[in-house]
Length: 214
View 1 (cartoon, rainbow, N blue to C red):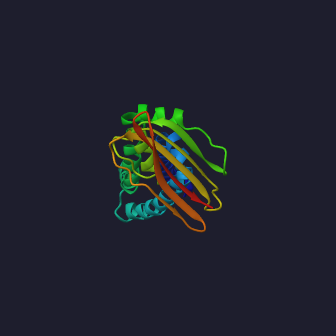
View 2 (cartoon, rainbow, N blue to C red; view 1 turned 90 degrees about the horizontal axis):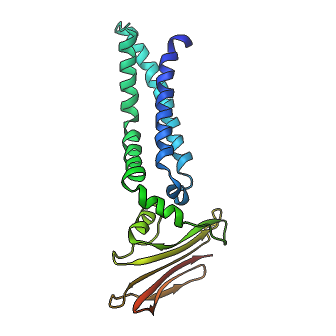
């Protein structure tokens, strides 16, 4: 029985290896910096699909017998199509991200990776200086960082967080033209504070936004 089923197990194994390879390709340093659990979470999805395929292909074997489909080639072709159909959403998702991370935005993501540095503070986090708005938007699309106007430049941030506790410190600074309006504010309660202020430096507004949770 195992010998007859080995070809279907190979189909599932090859499918899992292909998906795992795509996962490893799109989860670059930038992604892992801001989404550290992405690989184990996505790998659990791959395992779940593999387990589901074991059940589906077992049902398919019964279908082959009932309908007298004895051709090994035809059985394998059907099994491969079933496997690809079930896994298609991951192939599409992973393939799109491989294209974006490794081809379309390869240069800019490599630039971001060289600017990210560890930060001394709470258990986790990092910092970066001299980011462009394009680089910052890639980071903010992964993380919760606030949106910035298209004319923001020379962007720097520091973000450290506990991991176990909800405590975190976030500080964001950027430059904008002096004529642009900035809404300044401060807010503070027992455990949380945030605010925005600016200074005029070299005929530009240097804006600082911060959040603290303790």
